[in-house]
Image (tube, rainbow, N blue to C red; front, side, top):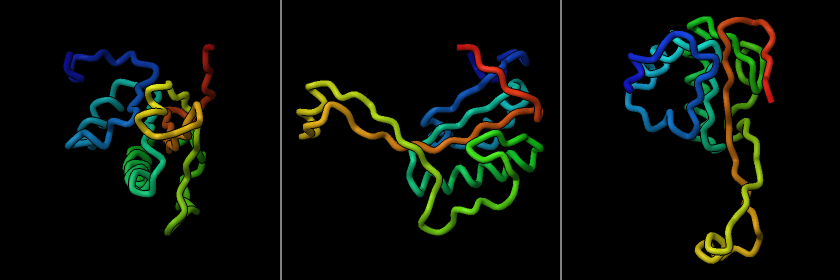
Length: 128
């Protein structure tokens, strides 16, 4: 199914480590934004990906998207130069994965950065 065929009743759309792979990310975001209430973009937690997310942030704010995370303000990001907003999660490693990477720990830290946008400034309700 092509994204042009998707209905307009989508609650949440997620790009996870994928928007950097899209040639025309503006066209892709425009198409999805027309159909969704919330947009979550997750990319690797590197300075390069963070800079790309800041470009996307500005683009979406210009479209009057409401920024819900990681910061909720529309001011200039206070993290500049060699600092960037990122988080980390411990990801389990299998025995084979440890052998391939020459690691001893049963996990590795995966750094990521994200942006969460909404159409409205209302309250986000998550069903668990």
